[in-house]
Structure formats: structure tokens, C-alpha cells
Amino acid sequence: MQENEKNKVEGSTLYLVGTPIGNLADMTERAKKVLSEVDFVAAEDTRNSMKLLSCFGIHTELVSYYEHNKRESGERIVARLIGGESCALITDAGMPAISDPGEDLVKLCAEAGVTVRIVPGPSACVSALALSGLSTVRFAFEGFLPAQKGERRKRLEAVANDDRTLIFYEAPHKLRATLTDMEEIFGGERRISLCRELTKLNEEADRTTLAGAVEMYKQKEPRGEYVLVIEGGSGKVQQENPLLSLSPEDHVAHYENQGMKRMEAIKAAAKDRGMSKSELYKLLVDA
Image 1: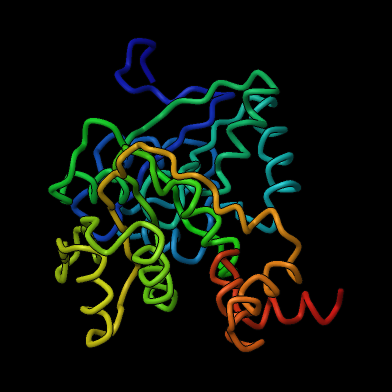
Image 2: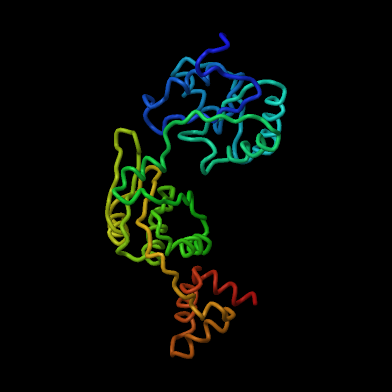
């Protein structure tokens, strides 16, 4: 290699390499060069990544780096980087380290004084934002919501009045429950863009309201991974429900004193607390 070679791959350097999110034609020339010339590639799923690299005739060594081995694998990768090798980090699709365990590897490199460089590429969240038809001036990326209903609703309540455009990732099997919670917490009139299959043959960007989205997916089967882009709120913080300061038993008793039957009162109190009726019932029984 010549010393003044453009985009020269250097030792003791971690390269964060963006890869296509659906369309192989989106792989950049620089990404292909770096992936070909680094000493090894760290990948979330080595089987998927091997197929991707093979499409471009790249046969660089692959090592596994994902959520459940990131601590041990991360330490091994950093040790090799300190020893003078170069590594490219890729995820299954899009930019590594964004809602991705690569975030921890970047932190390890920063702590160890290892150089990290970026090779930008496709990003599902930014692509969906650009397609949404909503404000792109200020936005907040929230990533995946918690799977547990109570925790999911708590997170949504925390951002309900944020006046920035909000971006979420969601899996198809959880979409309907998430949309229902969003409609209840954000309000049915809030605008949303539901983006799926970005850059692929069946790319869609459905622009509607949260109420419209809930109705749409009563009839339509969710398919593929979704990016949900939602209009920002008013920015005004609503006063917290004073009933939340009560104990669960007193909260239920409040509704019973208004004439509700026991199970109706539990259901109403559970909704206030962002949890399911069964979760609150169990809490009362265990108390």
C-alpha cells in the first residue's frame, strides 16, 4: 500500500461499517474496501454476514459479537486491536452501535484508547424519518420499547409531551399492542408514519393518525420490521394523576367507593398505573 492511499485501512483501528438494510446496491465502495482489507470482521450474526460478504467476494475472517457474548468477545476484540490488528464492526443491517450491542464495543475502545472510525451507510431510523412527512427539524430516537406492557406504557408516558418527532422500532408481533398503547397515551389524533421493508421491493410508508393506525391493523396483518415515526406532542407537561400516590389497595378502594365492583375497580386502577388487570390483581393478592 502507498502511504498516501485514499481510505487506507490502518492497524489498531475499529471501523464501524454501515451495511444495506434491504437493498444490496446500497453497499458503498468504501465499505467494501474496508471489509476486504481489515484483519477481521466482528458481526452480530456470522451466518448472515458471511452471505453478505460473499455477495461482494469478500472472505475476511469473521468473529461473533452479539448481545449475549459482547463482554467476552469485546475484550478479545480490543486485545487484538491493541496488538495492532484492524477490525470492522457490522450489524445484521444498517449502522452498528445504534440500538445495537456495538455501542458497548465502542465504549471499550474509547476506554482503551483505541481509534474508532466511521464508514457511514444506510440507517433505518433516519430513512424512515425522511419518508415520514413529519417535522425533521428536531427528533428523538427511542429504539425498541420494553416488551412488558407496564414498562412499555411507562416509557411512552415519559415521552408523551415531548415536542420533538419520535422514532421507535417495533417487531410485527408486538405492533398492535404498541399502537393501542400509543393511541391511549398520546391521543388518537397524533400523526404517525409506519415504515416497513425500507429499500426493499415492498417498501411502505403509511401516513395516518394513531387512531387510524389502530383501525388499519385490525384488518391488516403486521409483516416485517417497523419504524414508527410519530408527531411530537404539545410540550406541556400534564399534572401527574394524584391517585398514583396511593397504595394499590387504596387506589382500588377509591373506585370501589365510587360504586364500582371489585374487578371493575381493579381494571380502572390498573389502567391508571400502566399495568394489566392481572398484574395489579397479583400485587393485591401478594400484599
